[in-house]
Length: 87
Image 1 (tube, rainbow, N blue to C red):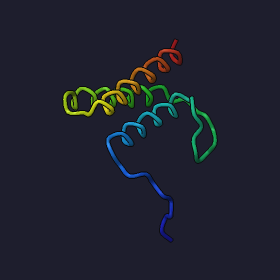
Image 2: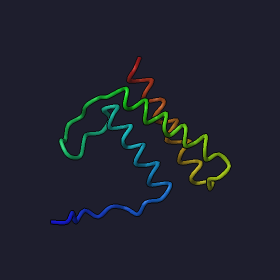
Image 3: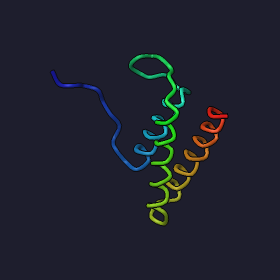
Image 4: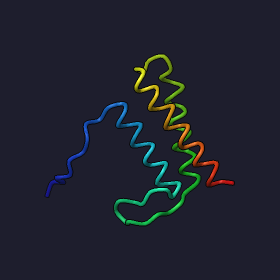
């Protein structure tokens, strides 16, 4: 039986938001939508944050103003939360 879950159209913004959500999940700040549990995986959170950082670096100069603000805000938010969780 086919999965009838309606997923949002993929764009750069939805991709970054997906990575942002994955990092929040790994930091234990949001619950897993399947298990309804909050679990921490700090190593996974760091890796996801680093991936967003690589994307920021590699796309520099090629983003719209809104996309640039999105990636900057995501990184700032995630880095602050990571520091809170690891100190």
